[in-house]
Image (cartoon, rainbow, N blue to C red):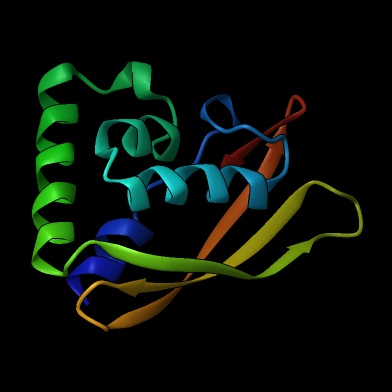
Length: 121
């Protein structure tokens, strides 16, 4: 449960992803997490990283590292659904994640488009 709360509370910003779609942003972030690149994951996952001090970033990365190591890392993830509103301004992504220890969880990430950029709600 702590894992879902930890990762569910992180926000995604399009600036760090390789795509301008919500699912592309999520895929970029979780790919870095799966590789063990927690710094890169954090940079993609937390919106407005310029408002986070280096000490805060280090604390978050240490927490992510601790949680991932306690759960055997991220074995796999799958974007199960991407729902973009009819007006194209909001989206909800559902992600199933499986940890190395065999536990899994399903998380939702909500986005809104502001000035042409997808950001977390």
